[in-house]
Amino acid sequence: MQIFRQYIAPFIVVVIFLIAMVAVSARIFLPGDLAAPAPTEELSYPQEEAMLSTPNVHFW
Image (cartoon, rainbow, N blue to C red; front, top):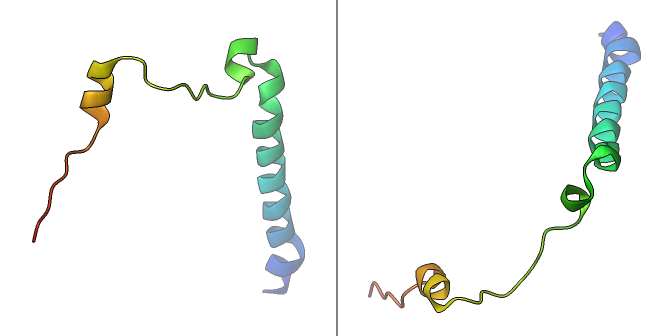
């Protein structure tokens, strides 16, 4: 158990940190349009609004 606490657990923590750091810093190498935040635009077509709206359904 002492070997796990001194060697294995810290190694796992460091590996998880390095994987997270690589995943976050990978945005540098993405094309400009993929590195930008996702657009938050309003729906402009009534058909799309009708498809995405939820009907008023009552179960009581």
